Length: 409
Image (cartoon, rainbow, N blue to C red; front, side, top):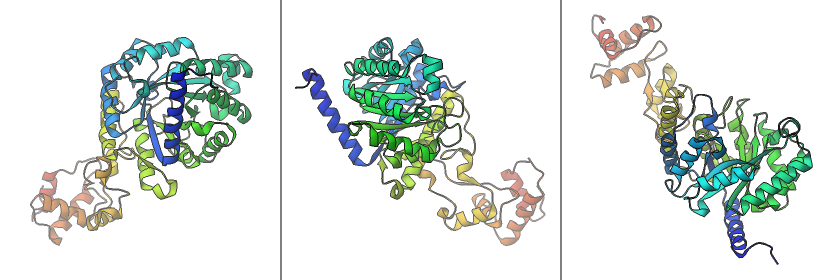
């Protein structure tokens, strides 16, 4: 006979069914943490109204869940979470909590107006020797007790309870299994695997996921979420390796925002999965055409500029100056594109005129300007480009001048 109340028992059966469906469906669920982990990046603070705008845009893009904030951090986080409640249809809102009853109570208050099946808490507790000895100053047994108590308390108040062993990837493997086993037995519905200081490689990231899948009893009734930081520039690669090893949820941020070197970039993981479905055997439910606009919105509201070389929506992704590439693009766009810009809502490809440009791109610009684009005219423009001092802009007026018969500007 189950010791659970009738409501908890029914809820547990529904959760098992839903989670089992997710685990069998071959769909990667995207959990965005831009509004919490991303905001921890120095200088990227967001006001509650800004968070709501981003949350709505993320919901429209098809994310499964949002890490909405850390209520214990202060009133601004609480206000941001409250504003999102009921405003992002179909998305699960979660609040970050330490393994403290007070944190969980704050989360319950902040999420009070969110439907029960669409809200949850993400509990974290340091498990590595460094965290146990220097941060928590607790023994292994005491940390297990903290996990058991907090997960049990949270499961009485939320249908969705995630547990993450902070600094998991520097924790003793056998002890890490104990931590997650405790969380699962006490009611966790998601096991988050955080590479807190970004030390993993793809091989070790996959190994940690396999460790949990093979050694934590009952984990088949939970979702496994990968959460990777980018300190070695491997966050996206590690996330993909975790997916290949069996993780169902990926926790990412727009633009890779986050502490130190940031988090795994949601847009990069999403496009990599889209282009390599045969390799990963997984699909997703994101509307990829929303990615470039999302990147622009987050950059605008956080004030964090986008590098021109940023994958997926950086300015240079859809611009080329090299003559060979320009010639190939003009003959068939896919010769030098991994995917068309419209896939991610990006702008049309821009053929930049410069010293490396060839006649094909020059002719295309001449035609766009309504000028003759014969060999002789194109040759004059090419010569003008090659002679142009470094840093001088290539304007339409300059092109018109080079194109003229006397070569005057």
